[in-house]
Length: 300
Image 1: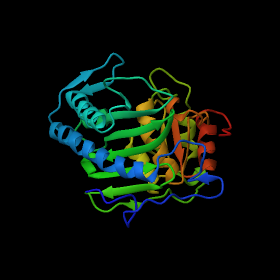
Image 2: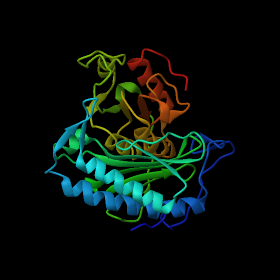
Image 3: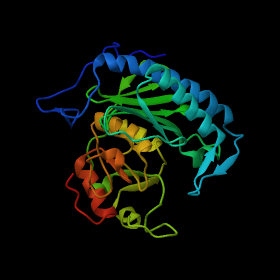
């Protein structure tokens, strides 16, 4: 059940003179009324998608896309359900998803969908997968939702209203990243070794160097690691290969939890169009990771 953004069910923007949760005020934002309208509708769409993803879990047949990645009937059916719910609620909004495509619009409102983020885990029957839903306004993520069906929990955020966690439909609680740590003490999550010096076809990212300098490097995987970062259980998370429907949901959650996000070269402008991601509890830690992985000093 939806109880509102905060413990009292009220929506309150968190702001200082120039920034809202570390984001310049010029960034597109939703009004409190819009957030109140979005949350119950998105949660209803996620519940409908859960019936599909959890219903197929442990008995799924795998198919492969042209790029070699896995896809299942559950991926496609869940995205169709999500699209149907969103279009019923907001017929004028654009929708782009991993399975059925669409245009990544730079003007107006555009929903991004990843019905099963972590399909590689899903097909093994592991619970480390999620559903990602986000809303872009003029190309910038204004709302994001990291939903973990097997754990019955959802992390969500809207710019200016904080990052929230709800489990089993209980009243949401606000979550924040951990206190800043140095790279040598940090616990960092990693989804895969794609595009890295550990891949079969070596890529540009130097994961080996990071593994030797970080406090602990853990193979957590996909959107789960960003939910853990937002509540302070991980200090950072890395994905060497990303798509807009992945990034759109993660960015608002990380930023509203007090974290910092960029690609692995340290660039944060037009974040949903980046092809890699590092998110951390502080900008200092994020830059240190970029310096190790990309061999650069990130200024973003």
